[in-house]
Image 1 (tube, rainbow over the protein chains, first blue to last red):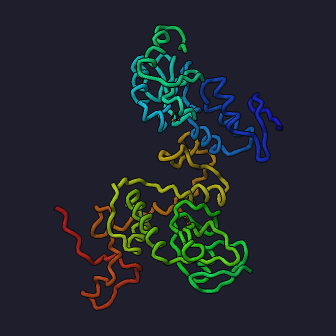
Image 2: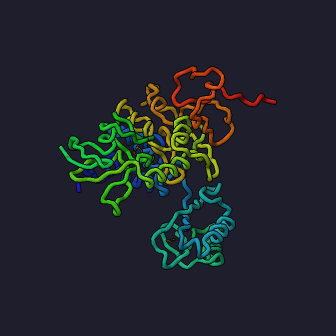
Image 3: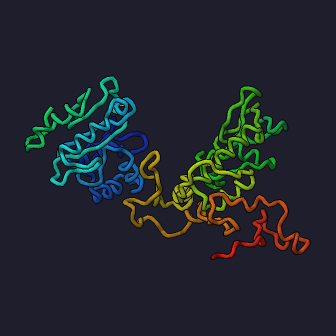
Length: 157
Length: 226
Ligand code: FES
Ligand code: FES
């Protein structure tokens, strides 16, 4: 695979140009969000219309245009997880950590997001904390998961 | 040249055309909402549905995106096609009752009730504006944002775009920007004023007084506002 350097990030280049998704992932990983000025500069460097970059950034739930918390909490609300009570779990997490769904806590510590199916329905319902999957969740377990985290330590597994 | 059968008629059309273009060439009218001659077909509105295939095995396809092929059997006016179109029109009416074009289609197809909760959206996501901006104006100032039921059309960062030259092509081509006429039932989801086969002016003047087609029944008395 050919590579290109955009904004200092090494990203794969396909037959129809640089991969926008890969670039945005790299930016998101490094800064925890996609700053507007980076998107503008990226569009200019890649010579693609700004709207294309913006559409991609808005399309995927893993991209954010506002700063995200240091810890990413994702609850699955897909069909399997929904029928096994993911709603209660989301509520519980939201309550313990004091963070609204699809937003970031005021101290910038946690972001809570809901997504539809993360592809592990067998162990529904699922909660993903900083990329680590926790299956067969219950509101009780979810509460415990963050009991220490909320007291100042990092979120634990 | 490609030979095929359109509504029982043997026709031959140039290769590379679509069913919609072929039908148009032979004078058969197919309604469209997301098609424009000068833009690439998109197949979003599904209004141009036609039946393609052997009788009994025929399926519904969108004519604007279906390329002609040797030996195709196409029907544009079966009950199945009309029923499907009526359903689609009803759905569009529920989502966008303020559009003249959609109200006209409803009258044309005799859609007289809407069984869905009206949403009063201002966009049917036909994508015409996005395509005209990109393909004709070479600006690419607007695009689809988000996905699924949350999809909408906007500029980058929802602000005035530097790529926009304010040419107005997007509004010109929009099928729902044009507001419906303020007929006698302007408050309701469905107007159906154009369903009037006999223009009301016949009773008053013995002949139609204008060349509006379809008649919008402008002579019907409006309820005086209280
Ligand atoms: S529904 Fe949650 S993993 Fe599939
Ligand atoms: S005109 Fe064919 S789908 Fe809209």
